[in-house]
Each structure stands twice: as structure tokens, then as C-alpha cells.
Image (tube, rainbow, N blue to C red; front, side, top):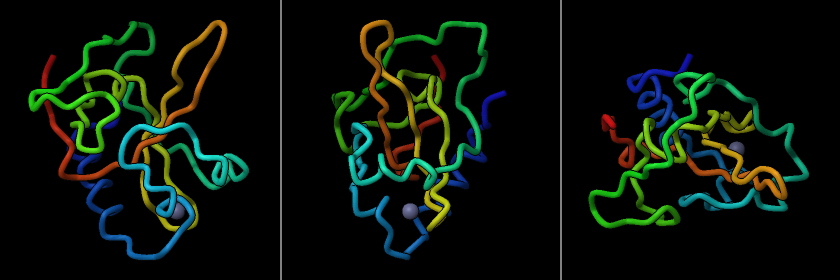
Length: 129
Ligand SMILES: [Zn+2]
């Protein structure tokens, strides 16, 4: 079952309140990015704490949410849990500092790429499809 929006918002606000320096924060994961090599070595650094996938038996939409003209790779692109790629993301918590991130796997078949993005409260939008 997917994490509800209120919980997600709360976790985002908790993350934003963390001031401790940490390698995850140094990676500046404002937009969706490939898992940086500095963190790839430390996969144990992240613990999966939930999922944004509403129904594992249903293929989530590839529609994106960009009312302000942002793009998938924009730093300020909204995080709308029902839209791609948030709708196929897992929620990760950094065990060192407690900040939260979204992770999804791009591709399939010939290649897969793990992408990460910081969960930032001002970007969260509870938009319906
Ligand atoms: Zn961290």
C-alpha cells in the first residue's frame, strides 16, 4: 500500500529540518539523478521505508505533472505521487542523518538505472490524475 500524502509531507518536512552534514546531502539530489558513485558504494546507507506505488498489479501511468512548464530533470519539478516517476518510487531514509529520498528504476530489458531525488516539502503536490 502506498504511503499517504500527509505522511509523505510530514517526512519531507522532517528531512528539511535535518541540519547534520552527510554524504547524501552533499550529493545535491535536487533533481532526479543517477545514483552518485560516492553513494553507490554505500547502498547500506539507505533503508527502504515505504512505497509510492498504489497498486503493484497495475501499471502506473507515464504521465508527468508539470503545470509550470518544468521538465522531468528540473530541480523544481513538482513531486506529485500519482504521476511519473514518483508513482513508481520507493521511499528511502538515510540511516546516517534521517533525510528522505525517492528512488525509482528507469528502463528494463537492456538496461536499468537507479535514480534518486531528495524529498523536498515545497515541491510536493497532491494532484489527482
Ligand atoms: Zn544522509
